[in-house]
Length: 316
Ligand SMILES: Cc1cc2nc3c(=O)[nH]c(=O)nc-3n(C[C@H](O)[C@H](O)[C@H](O)COP(=O)(O)OP(=O)(O)OC[C@H]3O[C@@H](n4cnc5c(N)ncnc54)[C@H](O)[C@@H]3O)c2cc1C
Image (cartoon, rainbow, N blue to C red; front, side, top):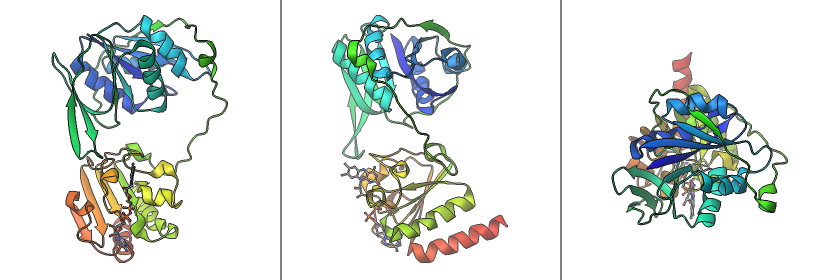
């Protein structure tokens, strides 16, 4: 069986989610190949090869959204019985869903684990990740899995650059004409939330948008990224790009510091695999304390300024 991974890149840097999926793909198939929409396949072929890709099938879709085009091109490349793995990204979901609709190939989303074997088992998280379900495909068709970020650890296997095979442009009609007119870079101060070694997040317990500065100050003193619960995103205190959880970002830092966050299951699903969790919450019964390695029962307005002082003293 060949395992195809839908590869994504920003400039010449391959997305971490692609590297995670490639690492898992190596355990599952006889051969790993990649599908890529972009003009710089030659530039990323070395990285893809290092992560086990023998061949990358590439198509330059220019300023047209890749979804309809790639879904129309894939049936020429992917064979019945193969497995395709996509990250849960905008393009990944678009291509996977369109390919599934075109070919009637079954799709499983929200995958957090894949166990190799004759009958590959897919783990999916349900009820806010409080339950894990094992599923396998009973079909001869191509199988499609959409994975959640950070489900696998990216590890290079040290292979040589992947061969680049150019896909010919398929006929798509109007569906393949949706163009990207503008794109905006998210403004970022400090490290990227999904990739930071330390994340400091704030919740409704901060008491108001003006107190989010406590989160920023702690983060600033230790070079951490800043995150948030959905409650304070919905309240307009911080932008959605900071939201951690089921409908936000998944993070897996070395240290996650939660300030005034209750630990609802929808929040925890996005951060509970952090190596160490520190929680400051005045309610000893708050669920976040149950998963915290260090739980401080106290008022953020008393504890956090002292924490900042101690960190600043240590830095000076
Ligand atoms: C479909 C769905 C998807 C969702 N997706 C997400 C998601 O992606 N991410 C997410 O975060 N949520 C998500 N939610 C919302 C989630 O259920 C919770 O409502 C949300 O996480 C609560 O945010 P919070 O912990 O900041 O607020 P609260 O639940 O209000 O908790 C505030 C906490 O602060 C503590 N506190 C209060 N004052 C202080 C103080 N002075 N000092 C210290 N502690 C204090 C309180 O004890 C309390 O535990 C989702 C919900 C649904 C239904």
